[in-house]
Image (cartoon, rainbow, N blue to C red; front, side, top):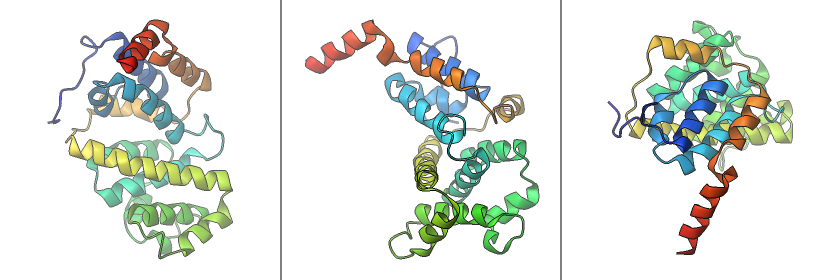
Length: 221
């Protein structure tokens, strides 16, 4: 059971409803982590904007969703976040990841023939970043650069870095995984429409003149 309440659809304020509507349009459902974090909508609205761009390929157009998924799942496995592992192995299966690949990802992926050399480089960098070996082990970054552009290296690092935070947040809040029906809706979100992303970002509080006036008044106090 979560350490803090989950916001229901019936309880949601307009700012929280914008988060829920955006999550449904972009990811197919509203997760428990979104319902919990929506208690602070001014934080969660921009965070979800980053989260969506980190998860999917269509927003930046730089890094494919398969590589992002491998990085996210490996990071979550190393941190032992069951909630994030459950979510993102579901995404992996929707993208074609097999049970054998999931097992190899958690184990001896470097000697597995189930991943490409580029896959292994991305996984190794997520491992290096999560376990904080990057200062004393320069080989992981060097190998990453042989397979990915500078912008892609940046995105891989941002994705793993974000999920190091998100793993800790979800784990600390002791969130329960959603039911099977909710998780199955997540499988359908492997591809998203950038127009839905733009619509979500335009629905956020900083585009509301009344909200901005209120924010500026409070900031001036």
